[in-house]
Image (tube, rainbow over all chains, first blue to last red):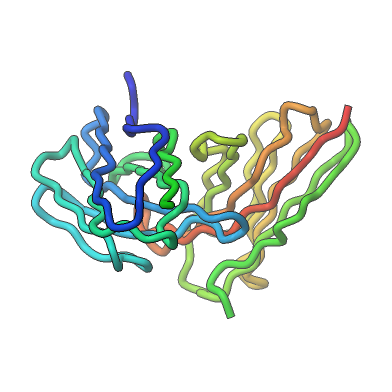
Length: 112
Length: 111
């Protein structure tokens, strides 16, 4: 049972480039989330999804897009990367019956 | 006022000490409370989950919720160097979703 898997673990992007952060869960959880974590700032919600085909904005959605075509996958797309998007990105999932969130191990992104 | 506040630390204690970690919050509708532990360069992992007011104990860890004061605590007894991590509180009005996270407290337990 892998839980929540994120790829890649590390990435360096140049300003203006685009990339997709991948997230897959194998627990059949309905809810999935993308957070970014900056030093001393805690976890900020970017986007979330309550099920396949349904997504909604969180606290800091600007510069990001998501899709949820299956229950398992919730990719996060960065268009036109900016230095302000340098952060650690965490994907998480939960369900109506699960205790709390299960987090992935994170993607450390640097935009230069 | 932030919705969830937490002293960022760092908090340094000697091995064996009792540690108290705290969060305050402003939304009186929060009913579900969690504590996560996050080791350096890892994702957060769930430590404790409590509902409404009261105490919950699990081994060396005790979670306490005081809804009247909008204050939650995590106590660690007989702290170990392996407890050195950042501790995040989180809370929600809904079971299983929409949790708001505190910024985390960095704890160092010195051998």
